[in-house]
Image (cartoon, rainbow, N blue to C red; front, top):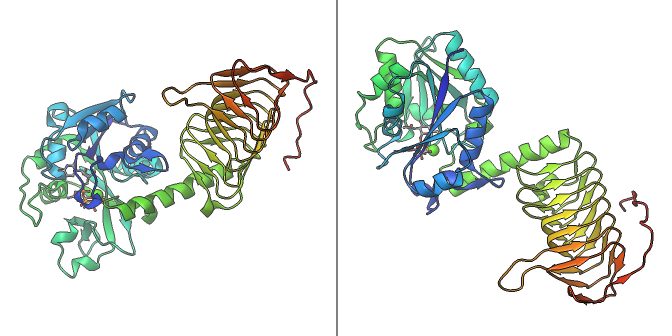
Length: 417
Ligand code: UD1
Ligand code: CA
């Protein structure tokens, strides 16, 4: 297989989103849209990504500062998708391999689809190959025009379509693979001669076809995956599709999700086998949950939560940036923030960590086997030794005289009821 790179278009200001935030930073299941596109490319074996940025570029670059395989390319003015690709010329004009082009606003992309596209392109030695999708409602997408033999003749943007062309249901989800040399040759010839007065990438494809090169259109994109996010409704819709994927994936890995539509789980969450997620649970951020836990109903787990096995968290329990040891119980109305809770600690109803003193976040550590009675306020910074216990309503500071039952650690209660 020849070397392959990807150009991802992410420079548009996105008037349809009505947003100040760069569009590709809007989140789907807790991650910016662009992150999914990059991951799909990496999984498909793409070696290098050129991401074209313009509107809000500092913010986009800052958000992906850890992704060292990205080369950022600037497009100073959004003059269209074709123009955005042209901005990559200084980096790619001497490149002899295949260049894929994708849009940063298509987070539902899957690596398998990209692999299918690449294989077809390389196997058939095409100059350009695009993956298409068939949609019940193709409104807004570029339509695929084929001749009577089924060969692709071109793509016509929704705004430029005749009434008859608008009936076509096969659309361009913007998954392209080009012979790099042919791509840049064609781009140097396109003009902004259309309703939007933009340089369309789709016009470059036309030129490649017209000059007699082999161009293929394969119907390889599932309708669900084809969505480009241009407005807030599509953002929500993409989030719903992605949430289904996240939950299905967890269920395949042995997690029970009692009521999927009433549960929300971040794409970055990791959950162990035989853990049960009860309804109205909201898991946001990098959260790790072990095996055999029962979480919820109405639990709220936030970024940095790491939960060991056999933990039970019940109604209105909120956990943030905290480690919970094996067998911890916090069943009703508690807040555990910036804390390390030892094994088999029982956190009573309404007990909380007071982790923020108005200017600084402080940590709390509770030793193994401790019993934190209902209504206890643990005022951080605070360290409590193993097997301590508090009385209902205690306010515990670092200087408090903490009682210790010196009891043996009780065996983990595995009933989880
Ligand atoms: C584009 C395609 C359309 C396809 C649809 C799929 C063209 C002309 N049209 O339309 O055929 O059906 O995607 O979702 O290519 N961008 C830049 N610089 C620009 C303009 C756009 O980087 O000057 C970026 C945007 O940030 C966005 C992507 O390119 O991520 C696509 O642009 P957008 O305006 O959303 O194109 P569509 O109208 O959706
Ligand atoms: Ca779009």
